Amino acid sequence: MGEKRKGLFQRFLDMVEYVGNKLPHPVTLFAILALLVIGLSAVVSSLGVSVEHPGQEGEMVEVTNLMNAEGIQYIFSSMVDNFIGFAPLGVVLATMLGIGLAERTGLISACLRGFVLSVPQRLITGGLVFAGIMSSVASDAGYVVLPPLGAVIFAAIGRHPLAGLAAAFAGVSAGFSANLFLSATDPLLGELTISAAAIIDPAYAEGMNIAMNYYFIIVSVFILTFVGAWVTEKIVEPRLGEYKGEYREDLKGLEAIEKKGLIWAGLSFLIGIIIFALTIVPANGPLRADDGGIIQSPFMDSLVPIIMILFFIPGLFYGMATKNIRNDKDVANQLSETMAAMGMFIVLAFTAGQFVSYFAETNMGLVLGVYGAEALEAANLTGIPLILGFIVVAGFINLFIGSASAKWAMMAPVFVPIMMQLGYSPEMTQMAYRIADSTTNIITPLMTYFAIIIAFAQKYDKKMGIGTLISVMFPYTIIFTIAWTIMLIIWMLLGIDLGPGSPILYE
Image (cartoon, rainbow, N blue to C red):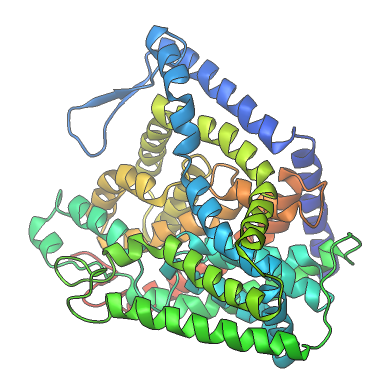
């Protein structure tokens, strides 16, 4: 029976890959989706579909028609802004300036070879997933840094590089709501939850705090690390098979000049850390918030340039020590080569940016969310089935709206009051939402960093398409959702607080 189930699941993944890869190239697909949104906006708008805005009582929201005069004006006038404003574009290009120099001078290769040769291989998969999960402290920077590093690490030890990329991507994205520390996500979602709770019970909302899920997300780190490593080694790697691509990573030992370069790079990195620490550790540090906070502060807003610098400077010193960099022209040439390699992603960013912006402009995501909430309320579910139903609805909505905060801003005023009236705390509703949101990120092309992951993957498999990537990541979504949901149910049955002063039930 076990073999039969495994066979059925593998055949299902084959079907997902086959159907997905029959889709056009991602660049073309996003262009087609953008045109489809324009057409659908006209059809749905002509039907007069409208919903009441969940956060603003009495305000009706209609689908915006992008085929009338105003819509056509928007399409042409916003095209450049949609491209420039595509969320991952600046983050990826800026970060890759630092990472690219470190890679092309040989620093990353030397660091990875030293790491691989010194760490037991049985710990590498779990360590990669763990690093991905913890990267949510740095907000979205983990999407740019860890998946390509994961691929290189796996290639260095003779494993399929796409398995390393998948393990890192799963940790970064599917584990986005798990961490040992509070991250920017906690206050971002927490404030929305508190505001939604005030609709029913202002006094209760006043006693809530942004660390409302902290206990749960700490334990989640260890559960998801184990599960992510298991899925990688037992499902994803066997499915990918032996890597037969052209990319290879040399695993030879470090030479004397490389060790010298690593010393230079390490010292420059340490000095950089000390300098940045002086901007954040002192109570009056320039990168602290006005109230002295760190989670919501200029420091958190500056993580991308900080990461860029912390890669760039050591890469520069390593290149100087190993004679790979002899003058400023060498630096400029290597940075230019790095940007040239990002050409496909830049093209993807243009068409993906149009689609994401058009979809948001039409309000179709908001309409879908409201109808989903009404369907859940009409089902008259209670207890564990209610929580499971909410996770399914939230996960489905996430396939169409990538931003966690944008979805929660729309959903919290609807679902939090509903769940409170059914006896569940706002803290509980938020945690269930975070599970659904995180675990489905890795299988929707609408997730803003999906395009860059495809671009990274095509370095190792030029035929990599949307279907292949989704089929590789789908097991993580399924197993993460099951494991995380079971953990939440056990937490419910035990009645343990989700965070400081944050109960399961609302009374």
